[in-house]
Image 1 (cartoon, helix red, strand yellow):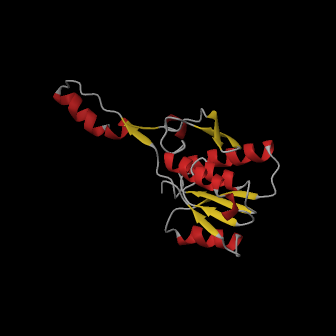
Image 2 (cartoon, one colour; image 1 turned 180 degrees about the vertical axis):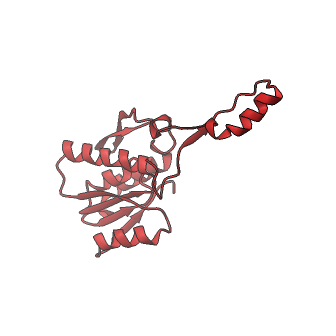
Image 3 (tube, one colour; image 1 turned 45 degrees about the horizontal axis):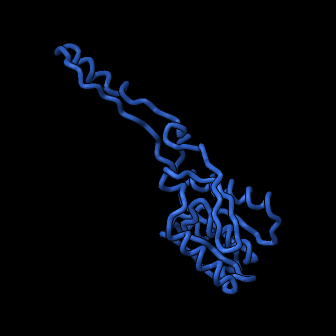
Length: 179
């Protein structure tokens, strides 16, 4: 599970019990035994709800969690989507890269107007749900727009270079809500 970009998930459990001197000495010797490694399912909730969002005449169905900060739709994204729906001509036929896309609500909406949209985020769990939402959108609604998801940690020159190598023509617009 851990790799060079993911910190090992661990939980240290300590129970304050009255101990004898001998037990206290044994506890110090066995301190390494207090670390329990837990897999990511302990920390990541993948019980996504299909949620419907409406922006003007555009209806989007997305998987998201209402309780996890990185897997919900922030108010800034709703405001940006309202603006983009009312001003769709600024998107028509253009290419867009969205920074901090989260579940993908803005990028997927842009896919209805743009020729290409690259959605980005730095978190693996968020990228997972974003990709599920792209798949859901493409399976329910044929689109001529190329929608893709890419990992991007701000300031990571390697990831920026990889995105630019895949998209050497660049992007007409850079979007971001709540970033």
